[in-house]
Length: 158
Image (cartoon, rainbow, N blue to C red; front, side):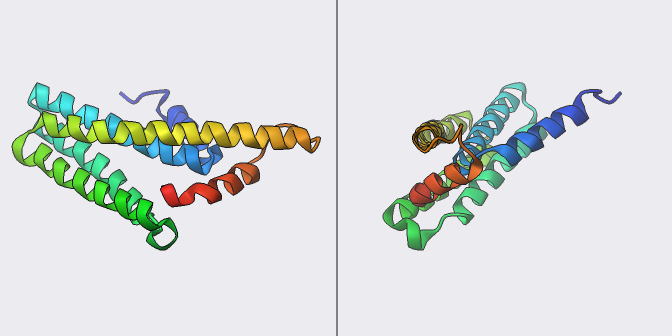
C-alpha cells in the first residue's frame, strides 16, 4: 500500500530546498548526512546489513558532493582543511561497512554536527543582517538576493 502523504512530503521537501538560502542548503546537507548515519547505526543494532549499507552510502554521497563543491582557489586554507576533513570522514565511513562499526558512524556524526550548527548560525546571521539592511533602506524583509550576496562573502568556508 502506498503512502498517501508520500507525494505531498516529497513536494514539501523539494519546495524547502528550492526556497532555502545557500547557507540553509549546506546546513540541510549536513543534517541529512547525520540522519543517514544515524539510520546506519540503527541498522547495525538491528543487524540489517542492507539498510546499513544503503544509509551509509547515502551519507557518503552527500560528503562526496560537499567535497566536490569546495572552491579550493577561493577558499584557500579553510577549503583545503574541509577537503581533508571530508576525506577523513569518508575513510571512517568505509569502516562502517567493512567492520559494521557503529563507533565510526558516531565519529563522523561528531564531526558533522558542529559544521551543521555553524551553517545554521551563519544563515541566521545572514537573515538578521539582510533584515537590518532592508529596514535601514525602507525595504520590508529580505530576499534571496540579499542572502545570496551575504553568503558569497563567506562561501569559502563551505
